[in-house]
Amino acid sequence: MPIVPSEYNPPFLFKNGHISTIYHGLFRKVDGLVQQRERLSLSDGDFLDLDWSFAEKQTRKVAILLHGLEGDARRPYIAGVAKLFICAGLDACAVNYRGCSGETNRLFRSYHSGATEDLAAVVEHILETKKYDKIYLTGFSLGGNMALKYLGEERSIPKEIGGAVGISVPCDLYDSLKQLSQPINFPYALRFRKKLVSKLKAKQMLFPQLISDSDIEKIRTLKDFDDIYTSRAHGFMNALDYYRKCSCKQFLPRIDRPVLILNAQNDSFLGQECYPKKETRENPNLYLEIPSFGGHVGYHGPKNITYAEKKALKFLQELN
Image (tube, rainbow, N blue to C red; front, side, top):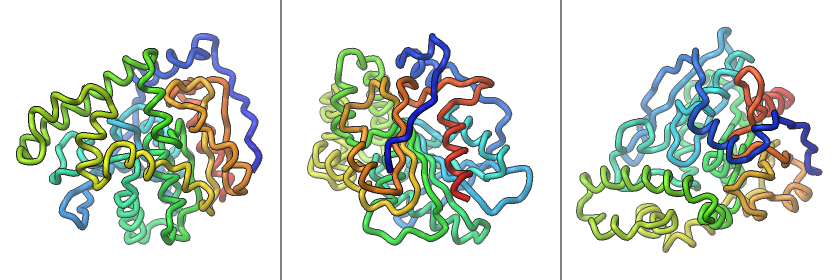
């Protein structure tokens, strides 16, 4: 489809991409959302924790919510969209990736941008409940990449999946890594690295034979982490092999459900390869909106409801 024109025009302060990113990442609060946790056992012996929120009236529609790198299902951007969805009559199933629910997962592996087998397990679990006729996917950043990769892989997508929204999606993982490696993004990269290394040290206590102190000492950048841990734990040759195989951009031509990708032009995490204009024009199921503003998972809006949340809801409602 043609690229969607954007009407997003935030207050002056939030036209700055970094202010938008930092405010919504560190200072935004979302109150009043009730979440019920369910533990989903996986076939490999590990688990995922799912945080459910339910609409006031019983519904046959549910949205699976996927968070970003080192996020969790209770981050404000997940809570915000869950609260909006349930008020509109959709249940929300917010997924905590392996090791992201406050408890270290059981295996040496954890999660990564292309771990669609875990998303498939959540979809299968929801279908087995027989409670829902429609399932929608909404992913933020890493979670957006995961959702779009899932939809475009050579798999049978259940008929109940009606569409998806990806917000601030690093469609080309290596391109995004290069942006995060720029000096202007150093504070973000440092924050991610510290969180990842902290979790890796906890995992080292469970698997001392697989990760050494010298391995951890070598991790100076996000790429180092992916070379030393992500690739090794998940069957990739190295970080570049991981980025190449797991970037959703290559899977977009195969997507056969309606998908909206919302990537701000001033998102400092995204390079030009993360804006799939060619793929959008060639696949009638893809809709790409590139607002001038928004930052990374920002999109400040009135009444503590972001533009991205309102846009996601509107897009999914129009699929009915």
